[in-house]
Length: 264
Length: 283
Image (cartoon, rainbow over all chains, first blue to last red; front, side, top):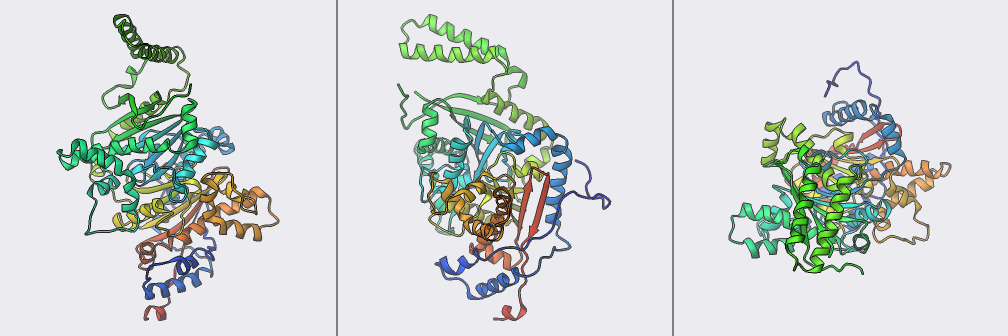
C-alpha cells in the first residue's frame, strides 16, 4: 500500500454532500413506532429533520470519511485502473458461480478469506450467517438474496460459511438470558435453535467453548437444510444445476474446512 | 427418477485445508482415489449394486476432472482461495490476526449490495476487523419492524449496542439489479417474484421521488438517480431504530451515504448532518 496522504495528490472522486431526501423515512418514526419514545429525543429528532431540508455542506474534519476516500483511492489506483478490460466487462454484467452466505463479523469477509475477486461471488451477510426457512413475511431479506442468486444469476454453488468465535452463535447458546434482552438479536439467532438442540443432546457434557465450536458448524448444516425449503433452491439442486456447500473458517488456528450436501 | 431428500444430509467430500500444500491438490490425488475405489469394487463383490453404482459415478467424475483441468472446480477454487489468504495475509500478519482472534472492534457498520462487483473489502480496501458488514439486495435498510425485519435489526442492534461502531455507511452502486427491479414494478403493483419485489419496495419512496422529479431522464438515468435516492431513504430508515437515533443525537454515531459507480470508476460520499437547536435541548 502506498502513502496517500500527500496533499499534492488530486483524488478522482467526489466528496460532495447531497441534499438528503428524508420526507418519507423519519416520518415513519411517528407513525409506526409502537413503543414509548422519549419525548425529549423525539423533539430533537424533529428539529434535526427540519434542518436536513436545508443547505448542503461538507464537514471540514472527518477522518472517517477520509479513510473511506483513501480506501477507494487505493482500490481505484491499484486494482480498477490496473485492469481496465476486466472491469469494463464486469460493468456490463456479473456471472458469479457462487452465492456465499457469510457472517457480518468484520473478520470474515469472503472476499478476503477465500480470495474472491470482484465478480466471483454474490454475497449475503447477516448475524451468524444464518438461513431461516422460507418465510415470505418474516424473512424477505435473505429470501431476496437467494432468489436473485438462484433465479437471475443462476449460480452453481451456494456456500454457507460459518466461523470461529461467532457472537451470534454464542448468544444462541447463552439463551435464555434474563439479565439482557434485545429487540432483535435473540429473535434472529433462534433460527439456529435446531443446531443448539442437537449440540446439547450429543455434547452437553463438553466444555462450553467446545459446544460453541460444534454449534457454529451445526448451525451451518441447519442453514444448508433450510435452503431446501426454498422451492427454487430445491429445484436447482434436484436438477443437478446447483450444489449446496458448507464451510467453516477457524481464525484461531488458521484453517478452513468445507463439505457439501449430496443428493441420494 | 428424481432424487429424494430426507432431513438428514450426507456430508461427504469434506476437505480440511490447513496442512495440505497447494501443489498436492493435483492429479496424483485423483489417481490414488481412483485406484482405491477400483480396488474396493474388485474386493467387495458382494457390495450392494447401489453402492457400486455410486462409486462408479464418483470414479467417472474424478476421471473427468483429472482429464480436463480447465473445467471449473468449485472445491478447488475455495481451497486455493483460502490457501492464498493464509499464505499472503494470515501468516504475514500474526500480530494482527492473533489480536483479531480475541475480539473485533470495527469503527464501521457498512450496508452494501450483495452484487459480486461491489464488496467493500475490495472497493474501500477494508482490512479484516475494520467493518461490520450487512449485504443484501440493493443495500437496503428497512424501517424498524420486529416481525418483518429481524435480520437487519439484529445486525444494527449488535453493531451499535455491542460493538459500538462510530459510523453507519450505506453504499449504493451503479447498474444495481435490485433498484432496476424496483423501478420496473408495474404501477398496479403486481409482482412476479417470491421475495425480491417485496424487499426492494422498502425504497419505494425513492422511486416515487425520481419518477416525479426526473421525468425528462431515460429509464436508465432514472435508475441511476434512484440508486442514490434509495441510499437516502435507507439513511432515514436508520433513524427509526431507537438505539441509532439516540447514538446519532449524542453524536456517537455518524450516518453516511455513498455511491460506487463501477462504469466510470467513481465514489461519492456524503454525510447526514444534524444540527440541534439549543432552545429545544432545554426542554
